[in-house]
Amino acid sequence: MRVFLTGGSGYIGRATIGALLRHGHTVEALARNDRAAETVSALGATPVPGGLGDPGVLNAAAARAEAVVHLAQAATGDEDLAAATAMQDGIGTGPYVHTGGTWVYGDTLGVADETAPWNPPSLVAWRKPVEGAVLRRARQGGRPVLLQPGLLYGGENRLIDLFYTSPGKDAGAIPCIGTGENHWPLVHIDDIAELYVAALKAVPGAVYVGVGGVNPTAKDCALALSRAAGIDGKVASISLEQARERMGPIADAFVLDQQFTPARARAELGWVPTHTDPLAVLGRR
Image 1: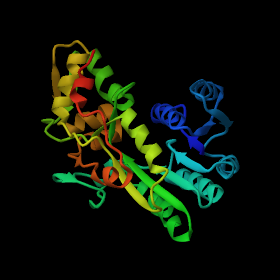
Image 2 (image 1 turned 180 degrees about the vertical axis):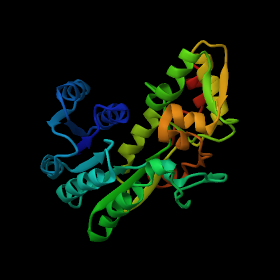
Image 3 (image 1 turned 135 degrees about the vertical axis):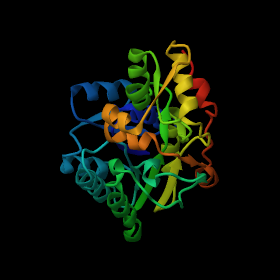
Image 4 (image 1 turned 60 degrees about the vertical axis):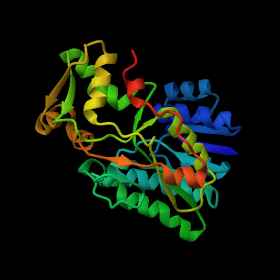
């Protein structure tokens, strides 16, 4: 299958290009600059010059493809919706896989699934109208699918490294917001890449949380990161107010207490996460 993908030079994008190619698909990937083009080319994809603010480029690339995977992070909800609209117009009745995230559900009060009510922190509140519009295309003959990854780990650990490991090394202790008893719905980068491939065969309008099914506490994750950083398991508790000062609005997402099951994706797509010990990965030097 010919797949057009946005965000190909990013953390999830690089892994997803690899997974698509392993499964026999060919990939064209949006590249906003020469460096991104070099990255996706090295991975085996064909670069398409342009950005999310280029609806004509997005529409034409989607029209050439047999499926679209939208991974790139938009600056605003309006930009994301405009990009999604251009690509859905282009792909027509072909599969269109859109990226969301589990943070939109807020605290889950136990183990939840895709039927949980939305209660997003302000950081991701904009997603509701965008994802609603994307999924409504199913009523018009489109094939939209929404994937909502949990907190990613493995490989570069982008968010975890930026907000936890790097500042923790500098301070001599990994930060932990409050008591750290809240749970994180982790998913390995290689597993989520496989879910994007599996989602190409999903029914129109389907929604899947992309999680590994193992939901350790933030405190346990911080301890593992501390061991990996070589600072003897040192963890420093900070208040939510301090976290907001250091991390910005994302602090309100990191403090969410979330537990999710991947049962729907397993039952409907045959997707089974293979990485089931996130603390061992996070704690690896």
